[in-house]
Length: 93
Image 1 (tube, rainbow, N blue to C red):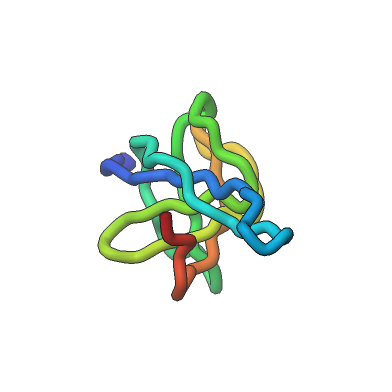
Image 2: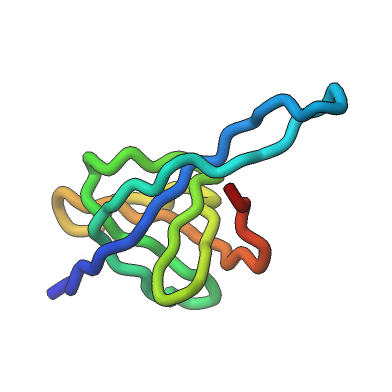
C-alpha cells in the first residue's frame, strides 16, 4: 500500500528582466499528495491522475528539490508516475 505524503509543487515561469532578456521564476507553492520512490536508476513520483503536473515543474520533499522530466505511465488504477531529476539549484522566487 502506498503511503502518500505532502509534497509542494512549483511551476516555473519566464518573466522579462530589466536588461531586455528573460529569467525563470518560481510561482506559488501548490500542495499535492504523492510518494517519491527510487526505481532502478531513477527517482519517480507517484500521485493521483488529477494532479496538475507538467514537465519542468519542481517538487519539494524531504529538504530536496526535484524537476519533473516526463510522465512514465499509470500505476495501479487512478495513479500516474513521473520521472524526476534531483535539482541542486532550485529556481528561487
